[in-house]
Amino acid sequence: MSETAVVNPFAEAQVGRPTGPLVQGFEVIIGFETHAQLSTESKIFSRASTAFGAEPNTQACAVDLALPGTLPVMNKGAVERAIKLGLALGSHIAPRSVFARKNYFYPDLPKGYQISQFEIPVVQGGTVSFFVGDELKAVRLVRAHLEEDAGKSLHENFIGQSGIDLNRAGTPLLEIVTEPDMRSTAEAVAYAKELHKIVTWIGICDGNMQEGSFRCDANVSVRRPGEPLGTRREIKNLNSFRFMQQAIDYEIRWQIGEIEDGRAIQQATVLFDPDTGETRAMRTKEDAADYRYFPDPDLPPLAIAQEWIDRVKAAMPELPRAMAQRYVADLGLSEYDATQLTQSVALARYFDEAVAKGATPKLASNWITGEIARRLNAQEIGIEAAPVKAAQLGQLIARISDGTIPNSAARVVFDALWSGEGNEVDAIIAAKDLKPMNDTGALEKIIDGVLATNQKNIDEYRSGKDKAFNALVGQVMKASQGKANPAQVNALLKSKLG
Image (cartoon, rainbow, N blue to C red; front, side, top):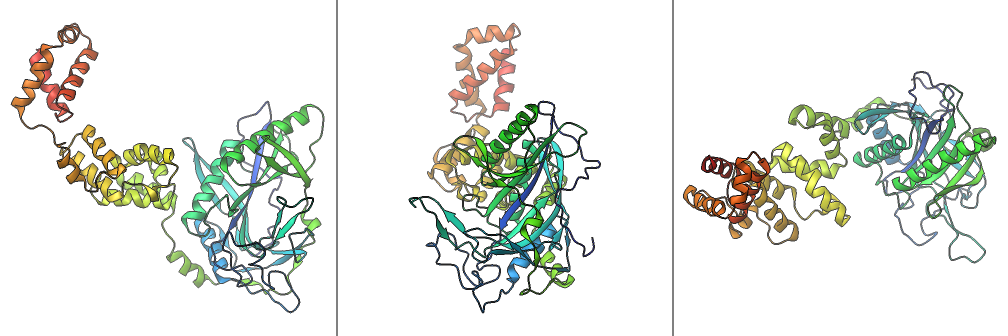
C-alpha cells in the first residue's frame, strides 16, 4: 500500500465475504472501532501523566488544553507502540503519515477539536485471525491511527449539573478500525477478545476495560441476503465482553423488528444500558464532513524510517498465534489446547516453565486448562496469583510420569500445594506417605480381603458385567488408601478371578 488516503472504513465492497447464520431471515453485518489506550507514562503531545485515578483536573496541562503559546510535541513511545501493532497484525506502516484537527464541540473537549489522523493513518490494513469454536476466522483491518483522548463528563453527585474532568484529555490512543467483516455476535466478541489479547501481549495497552483502556464501538446493521449493506447504528463504549454480547444481540433484534414493521433505520450513535439490557439513541451519527477535518498546522508529518521499524521488530515477543502453532508442531498439542495456553503471556510462560521443570507437555496442558483453570475461575484470580507455581506443577507431573505417585495421590499433593500446606512436592509425598505399594504380597492380602467380602460383585463379573470388576478395583484402591498401582491391581484381580 502506498502513501494514499484511507478514509472510508465501511465501504460497500463485500466481494467474496462469507455470509453468516441468518437471524429471522436477515444477515448481520458488524464492524468495530476500538480505542486502545497506549501504555505510555505521559500523554501523546505533552508531558502530563496518564496515571489512572488521580483527583479530577490534576493531570491536564496547558498543552492538553491548547492554551495560547503552547505547541504539541509528539510522544515517541506512542509512535513505537503503533509500529508494534502494525507488525503484529501484518499491516503496512506508513513511512509518512499526517495529523489532522477533528473539530467538534462538546464540554469535555477543551480545545474544540481533537488531534487525530484522517487521510493518511500510521497503520494501514492488516488482519486479525481467531477461532470461533473450531472454525478459523479472519477480520480485515482498514486502519489504526494515533489520536488523543477527550476529557470525561461526570454526571453523578452533581445536582442538575455535570462536572468535567480533563485528566484524560491528551491521553494517547490507537483507534483500530475493521472492515464490516463479522457476521454474528459470537464472531464479534471473539474478534474483540483476540484484539484485546494481542494489544496486551505486545505490551502496548494494559487492556483494563473497567478503566477505559480498551473501549469498543460496534457498528451493527442487518440486511436481507443479497441486498446492499443496511444502515448501521454505532454502539458506543462497550467496556466488557458480556455487555458487548448483550448489546449487539439486542441491537440486531431491534433493527429487524423496525424493518419488519416498515420503519427505516436511522444512522445513529447509541448507548447500551446494562440495567435494562437495551440500547438507546444518544445522537445522530456524524460523518467525516461533520467534523471538518483539516491538517494540524502545529504538527509536521510523522516520518517513520525502515530502520526504526526493524529495531522494533527485532525486540518484539513471539506472537500468540505463532506460539500456538509451535506448540502444535513441536510439542504435539491439539490446536484447541495450544490456543487455550496462549490466551495471555503469563499463561504461556507458566506452561513453558512447567514443561522446563519436567512436565510432559500434554499432562501440563491438561492440568493447566483443567484443574488450575477451574480453581482460578472459582477464586476470580489470574494465573499470576495461582498458589501452585509453575515449577511445582512441573515437579508434580514429573513424579506422575516416573511412577513415583499415581494420579489419585497427585491430586492430594496438588491440594496441599494450593492450600499452602507445603511447598515441596517430594516432602509432601513423604509426609503423607503417598508412594505406591511395591510389596506384591501385601497387595495380594488386600485383594483377598476384598474378594472375601464382595461375593456379589464376583458373581456379577463372572456373568459378564464389567462394571462389577471396576467396583472391585475401587474397593482395592480404597483399602490400600490409594497407594496400590492400578495396573498391578487389575492384573492380580483378573488372575485371582480366573
